[in-house]
Length: 484
Image (cartoon, rainbow, N blue to C red; front, side, top):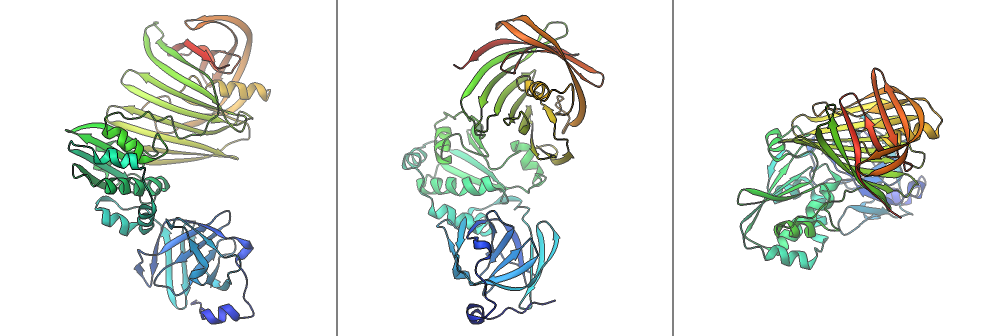
């Protein structure tokens, strides 16, 4: 049923005026596709209330700002000028005393799709799936107008702009973005501002958009090996000289870009927060005949919540696997990222554990996006392809005095996408002296059983394995450095 909106004057002086709900004043830009009177409104801006379930719509096609309260599905209005935007339009504050008028309700088709009528005008919100394919810079700003504000308000580092300007060789830059992606919104406008400020005719920029399922344009995704956005690929003479994936190595993206232009790409230490390093080392993998089949280099860090973050890089034949594995102070897995590459095939799976819900999102330049959601028990372990982080599962079982536990096993095979839950048991065989290439250690022997799979592990006091034997392979610690 149409909802009649009161005039601004009545809103300001009427007896049913209320102040900004709950005292909430902070709002953040969140991209949605908005249709007003059945037409797409590219200039509409949608904001989400920080810490509350409210969404605001501000559009030049509407006289008032509209606020949706998701808790009770009510619609409210206020004057647009009560929203005060930051210079980059990425955030806003709503004046604490702003009068807010309830004018009706809305229908929620799903979590991101809403239908309402205000003053006889139908308004439709839906999730933004992203612009697909090549686009000009102007088309980029038209698709996500807030990005233009971010670009215009940003001041890139002068030294980086000078380095970009000084490039004398023809250079091709391919920027792959998700117009739905927060990291793309954060970094791409800043990079475009730096390139524009340098005004170097030797640098040619091409921009592509991908949908949020990484299916379209599939040919571009596969050819450029894209599994995360933004991805910035720099080529010279038909050869890739570096790329930036998702986040820069340094504080600003233009610093990373300038380093690549000088053919001195920087090593990215990962985007995940960490504290002091506890230890680092290397394993050698061998097949059952004793022939070396691969290696794993790893680092172990403390985290602010009393937990640990493990990082491993595994090389086996022509395949590489990178694993980030985080556990909290109770040794409960909270986040794991597994990236695999073999030839032109690239995939990345991110696992998150929130309360009793484990979510996995698999992205591949071959298969697009696959989501997995599993309900898990409170006491759950996680076994990734990395040897270094396998000790987390054992330590958790020991700390909780469990001889049996449900554990999620991430795929070890390159071809598999997501893993499965398994019931595993642990049997401690006591402590013994173990000699490996890295030295001699006192280690606890543990036998792990998962169905018919049986493996034996020798665990260091710090929780990482020093040696192990499985059905198809064995491993041993070849180097170790423990921080003091």
